Length: 151
Image 1 (cartoon, rainbow, N blue to C red):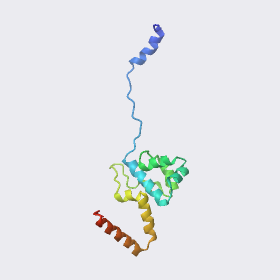
Image 2 (tube, rainbow, N blue to C red):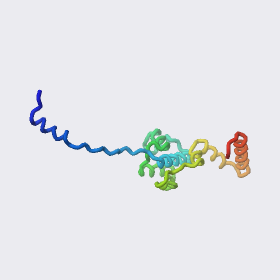
Image 3 (spheres, one colour):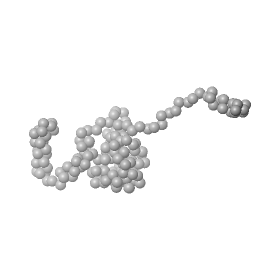
Image 4 (tube, rainbow, N blue to C red):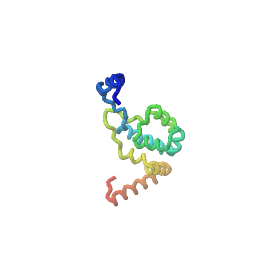
């Protein structure tokens, strides 16, 4: 069936309009998001808070906390403020060392402290007196040399 004159006129202008480019509205996570996530994880572990506990306090799933900590999902300003409150610190704690101009680097120390082992060893060392802490440090250095790992 042929199109009526009204149908042709009504759709004709749509086909002739120049197409606009669509903006990329997806906000991808950056190295700053990864660094922020590691700081959130380190502070959470320092406070002895599980991902599930933090998620419950914020009203999100523990998977969302995992995504924040891995830097997969970006943390908005309001959410960062909530996280800081729940972890008994301020927003500045998470934003230190982030200048926005250079790609932030994460030190080996910060990487280690953001793990369960890092938090566990720190906890254990705090409970020891100075001579015993020194003995543990000496033992760790001896082991690293024995296995050919530079300390």
